[in-house]
Image (cartoon, rainbow, N blue to C red; front, side, top):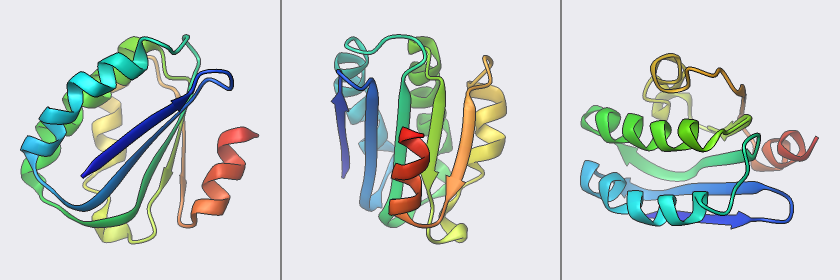
Length: 121
């Protein structure tokens, strides 16, 4: 399951990946992400929370990249990723090179509390 929400006042988006994620889950989330991103201004900050992720296969990379393209087009300025288990990274830094041409600030953390602090700093 992919859970996404925004705080339009603070210009913060949170995307949480929960359980076992398949390419179809990422594709299905895209319309909701588009709606949420419509309320964001360029430079918004995003928290990507993988703390509840059980698995996401390498076959998810293409769909994950397409979602990253949406974030880039909306003008994401800072991406804070919470990745407690480095084996579940899926090469996000490499994907970012191809899908974030405007090079937002990217911060990786292993603990959610640290990620929230860096998101709001």
